Length: 128
View 1 (tube, rainbow, N blue to C red):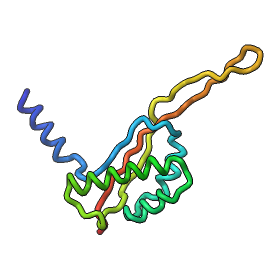
View 2 (tube, one colour; view 1 turned 180 degrees about the vertical axis):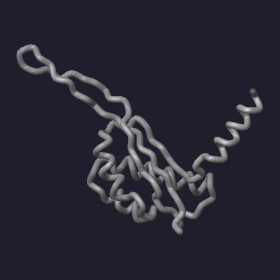
View 3 (tube, rainbow, N blue to C red; view 1 turned 90 degrees about the vertical axis):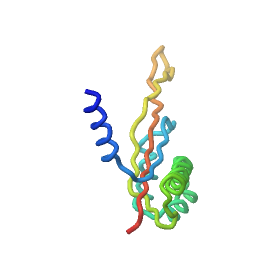
View 4 (cartoon, one colour; view 1 turned 60 degrees about the horizontal axis):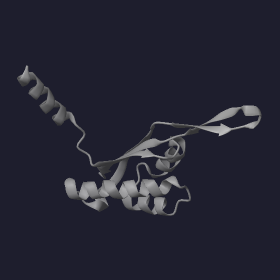
């Protein structure tokens, strides 16, 4: 049984995606607003993407820029890749837990406020 488990774990490691990546979790922004920013930089070279994010007006661009810098540092230090050859291969955002709050209204009623969170993943690749 232990041999089988060892074989399965080795096979899982071989099939694992080897591209450099960075993740950030539990960001207090709506996933739909973050997705707009990520769509503008997907597939671009990292230097161009950093310029776009640095000059963007959206508040989620600041978080995405920090995440991109982290992914670049992971690529350079852990994988030994050159910054000039990197592109943003994949970026995606998934919803995190939603904080449910109450907004008091007239006549003793209450409305529900949904404060959304998200998890952002950025995967880099080498330009061909």
